[in-house]
Length: 496
Image (cartoon, rainbow, N blue to C red; front, side):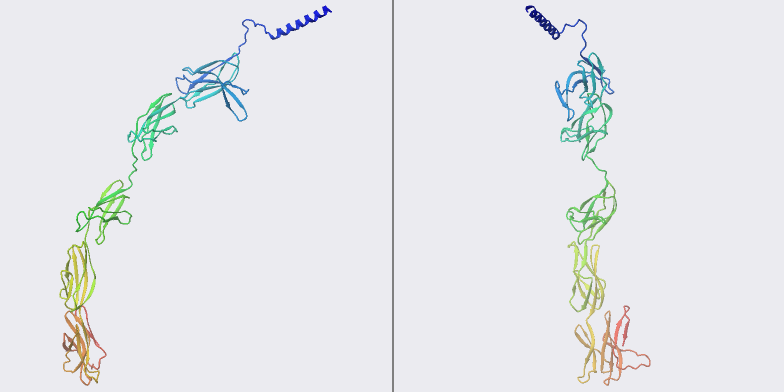
C-alpha cells in the first residue's frame, strides 16, 4: 500500500514538471532571431523643380479593428476605420525619404507642403516584416506668392477693394485700404500677367511677373486712373443778347436746336452752353418773348466744343390794328404801337398825307376821301396800318309837294349838312347815286318838268350840273334808277 502511494506521487510530479516545461519557453539560440518590422522608401518631389527638400512625409497605419493610436476618421457612414500617424520624415534635396521600424501592415503615405498647389498627396503601401517597400512617387506642384500695391490714382488711403488678378486664371486678391495685396498659392511659373481693376477706374495695363517656389514676388506698383468713356457728343457755346438791353440784363433768352430737344437759357451776360449734343449740323435759334428770333448754323463734332456766332435779338414792333376806316370830319384816330424794348423810339409816316396825316405819337387825322398807309418804324422793324378815309355823303331827294309825291328836288348830305343841287331849266329833280374820286364828288340823277313828262339824266360834279347824252333815237321817260361808280383810273361810270 505504501509503495502504491509513492508510485502515484511520483507520477503526479512528472506531469507537473511537464506542464511547467510548456509554459516556460526555452532561451532561443544565439543568431537565429526572425525580423519583426519593415520600412518604406520613395520619392516626393516638386514637379519641374531642382530642390525637393523639406516635403513632409507622414505614414498613417490602417487596421480594421476600429482601434487607433491617435487619430480616428470616419471613412463611410457604415464603418469606422482608425488611422494613426506612426512615422514621419522630410525629403532631402532630391526628394528621397526612408521610414523604418514599421510593423507589418497596410499604410497610407502622405507628402505634404504648404508651398504646393495640392497641399498633400498620398499613396497606399503594404509593409512586410524584414523588407523595404518602395512607394509610388508623390508629385507636388510648387507654389509661391505675389505681393505689391494697387492704388486709385496713387492715393495712400481709400484703396480698399481693388481687384488684383492674374489674367486667365482664378488667382486674385483684394487690396487693403493702403493698397497692398498678396496673391498666395500661385503655381511656379513665368510670364504671368498681373491686372488690377476697380469700378469707375477701368482696368490697368498688364504687368508681367514670375513666381518662384516658396517665395514671394514683388510686383510693380499699379496706379489706376478714372475711366473716361470715349466722347460721343459735343458741346455748343456762345452768346445771345437783346437789342436795347444792358450788358447784364440778357438772362433767360431761350437757346435751342431746331428739330431736337436740346434747349437751354442764357445767363445775365447772355452766355450759354448746350452739352451732350450728338454730332451733326443744326440750326441754332435764340428766342425771347416780344423779340424777333435770331438764328445761326452750327456744326457739332464728337469730343469738341463749337462756338456759335454771337446772336442779337432785335426789338419787335406791332400796331393795335392793321386796317381802319375813317370818316372825314370825325375825330382823329389814335394808332397804338407796342415796341420791345418799351423805351425804343418809334417814327410815324403816311404814304398819302393829303388823305390822312399822322403825328409823331401815331394820331391819324383824316383829311379827304382816299387811302393811305400809316407806317410805324423802330430800328429795323416796321408795322403798317391801311387807312381808308371817306367823306360822310348821302344823296337823295326832298318832296316839295304835299299833294304830289312825285315832285321832288335833288339834295345831298355831307357830314349831316344838306345841300340842294341845281336842276337847271327844270323845276324838279332827284339825286340817285354817287361816287368819289379823290376830292371830286360825282352825283348821278335826273331833272324833270312840272308835268313829269320830260326827264333828262344829269351828273353833278362837285355840285355843277351837266346833262348826260342819250343814245340816238332814245327819249328819256321816268327812269327806274340811276347809279354812278368809278374805277382806279378815275373814270366815271353811270348806269340806269
